[in-house]
Image (cartoon, rainbow, N blue to C red; front, side):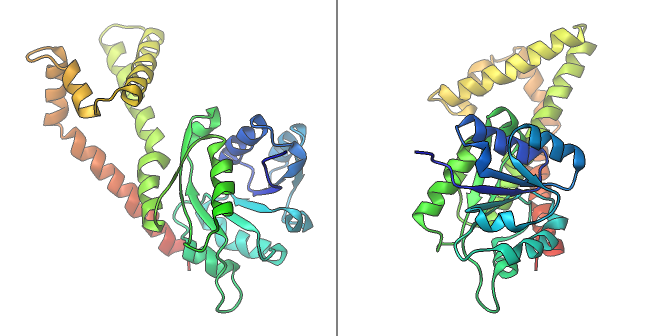
Length: 277
């Protein structure tokens, strides 16, 4: 039995590509996926993969059990209102737009004073492109167990899926795992640049940096020790690692990371005010 519902994805960019690739790899028939995308180039690429496409919202939405909004926050209200005429009473809505709250989506999709409640707000990240993503998800208490299962299955197709309690928690997820790959890529860039300045070739530096991060992450995942303990095990008193960590401490590395995450969390809240209700 096919475990996938029929799906419409509104917005056919990078994150849509990651999600759809995961679904297809997990056995979802291409015929069950409909993409709405403005770009002629992207529509041609989607057609080549066997899914149906359209340049604007169309009647196909009525026949899809799940809608995934994969557009930018500033586009969300306009897009949601354009799709609303095709909404069924039990369509499951999944939004991956940063900063757009469940309350905003509920109001936009609702009727009069009746808010729409079949909504999952989530924040995936770009490692989903290689099946190694992680997605934070939040929903109203009224979401059914079956709907939660469907959302977990769809987002879990491109990595891990983690349920959190609220919109505010999704903003924190955005600051950690949503924006986090950029922090990691910056760290990789810095490692490579530092190694080149110390005499390694760019190719050597890149291989060593990537293998170091991959191995360290794998060790942190599989070890019973906390990251704190693992760090201590690498650090010999008076050794090279201690010398490097002393510089990080002097430059307030940990506080800088926390400040950056707070800035991302604050910006997510600002987006909600700018483009929400």
